[in-house]
Length: 418
Image (cartoon, one colour):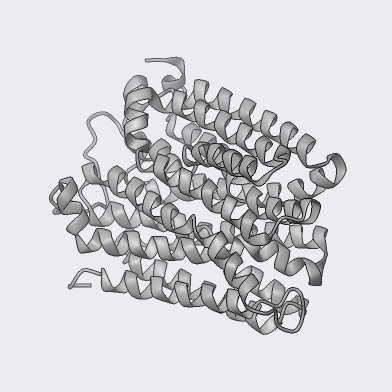
């Protein structure tokens, strides 16, 4: 047995490494584009709809890659796929900053999107799941909290660094640091598996009987049967709807709250939204019973975000206390949109099907939410603003309506005995 295995259970090292990966991946690939939208619009004068369409291309390219992520991991290994993804995302983000024409921006967006797919929600699940079964809710919550911390750190960091260095130099410096971090983690942590270290999931002894909160009675589903399964369709549909509403609103939220709060304070508000996400996800991990109906929990999380959208709507883009209320309530559910679907899959599908269900759910969600920034941008430009430049009632109303549709979809997919 290796020295690392002898020192203790290596799974928690993987969790913290996945936490760091999530900071880097989301910090560049998810929380970066909303800042880029505002910067590019202000410095180059390109239409909001055009820049939002580039964000759509970023997410859509990632959707194609994430659907094949299990196969990429199986063929090339976690280490190589993670390193390639870090390079692609970093180079793509630098391309955003250097684009002198819209076609260059779209090429950069496709490259960054391919890299983001290997560092997103499905990747974190793929890294953590082999090490935990019984303890997966807590382990995934800790790892996914890195996504929220990425927003807390990176949203204001992007704003401040762009102001201090300019967009191109800020992108080069930040991308170089993140590529270096992920390159090292991939070689020293993600290259290992429980089998390679002679360990068992959850740190159990080799002869321990596994205790998993999984759907033991569920039969494995071949590809065609999975697509016909109501549980899968409703889980994937609700996740896609939730991600569509969340991504569309997040892509425009910074620029909508800037008129009332100013650029620096708006960046802090975006960070506070992700701090609220850490709080919401951590509380769920701490209090959620093992046998809880995780669909109901996900529906309740979406309901809180609906109330947050209502606060934004009532603020008319000019009442700071209502904007901050909306940030807090909307933020509480941000992390749960990606945290809860893998846990729902764990309880509703046979263990061999869970990685495929998670990857396909993320891919379908990303394929839909890829269009969210552009759709929200077109709606924002097509309909007149309300009482001020930050007042976009149609944007907040659309987000709330889609969240409600996600709630209904989740409830439709519940098992009869629930």
